[in-house]
Image (cartoon, rainbow, N blue to C red; front, top):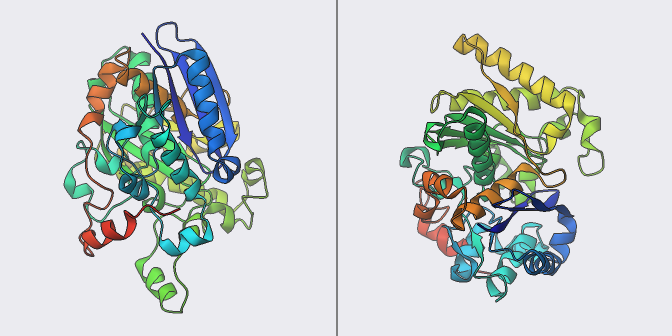
Length: 380
């Protein structure tokens, strides 16, 4: 058996979680402020190398942005890294935050101590388990870390009820600082998702945007920047600056609080078309606030019962991490599977090794080749 690690690159922090696959001992559970990672990605590389050496880690799964088909870091191309962190050349010059992750992925790829034991992983759009017709004109159906959350939820549900991974039918919800994402898991496979900028409003992110609004903005000589995707959400509606105010102060603050609770319920309702869940698991930064968990469960329960006429089991996704978020442990579980450890079957059920393509493969509204050409250029 192996010692393994996983990472999660969130809007607020870069989390690292590691455990011994045989003894279940947790040997790392920590968080690096995202701003620190953005300003100096080499700090993360040094920390990972130190942990690998100290604990003789065999496999690391590294948060890979929008996603790269499963492969060791050294096999990933610079073009794949560019698309996994895609951003316009103009915004590269402005120094957008996502460049921190881009540089980190490059450093891992080029580091001989990490690049053969570290794996880059896919986003939901690159999984063969999601039907093509659900991918049309979608880019973000869930970044790589959302797949990690799904892995942890499948593992916990199977363990809790004593069933095989292929018998797991659940919805996994991650309520993060920027966005809320929900994934439909049927027979242990991710089959649908409503996530990030293609979902209902999150805490700071506006979620899906009216196409007419994008058209209107682009025609008043103002480009629609990536940074705009991190505005307009529930926090802003309650006139709260999320970057200056603790999230605890948002709890109960209307009308944004109601928007956020309703949005989570709507995300789940959309996915009831794709799976009839045995349970819904809630994860992410917000579930560490007890009142928020209670209010979320009440809102979801009332909504689902009104439409489905039955009770639905809704619970927190339990993680062994006290500091690192659930996705980091999910990444470590995938690392265990890749190492041939206790979660090998879970990786097989998720069909991660069959992941393929780019995040632009299913675009029909414009020429997808132009998108690939434009965003596959590696620029720092």
